[in-house]
Image (cartoon, rainbow, N blue to C red):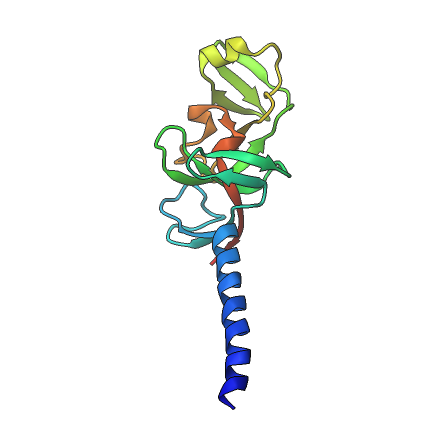
Length: 167
């Protein structure tokens, strides 16, 4: 009888450990602090981030080594904020290849929303299209959100994953 339990217990334990490892590698859980995504995501809500939604990242280098999908417009994503260096939740507002209007040496407009872009970065651009691998992100609560309207384009490597669920 004890032998049967070992034959069942060991594979079940290994399968459970494998499942936990796979969940840990592909998902992360975060407590939202702040109101930049109101009313979509509330302050103190838990969110689930799909870390492998766009590819495989090397954590120490913070870059994608394999990219199998790219963020789409209006997806809610987890990013590394270029100013505060903290993890932040934002929505993809504009994607590579979208046309913008240059209003001033450091200000562009797209879809009737103005964005402050680094003047040197804009001067390097040869066109009036969002460059490859760069995105504009915004918070749903535009009155309080620190987003691309302040810090400009973000690189795909600053996008940590896609929000798939909120609790």
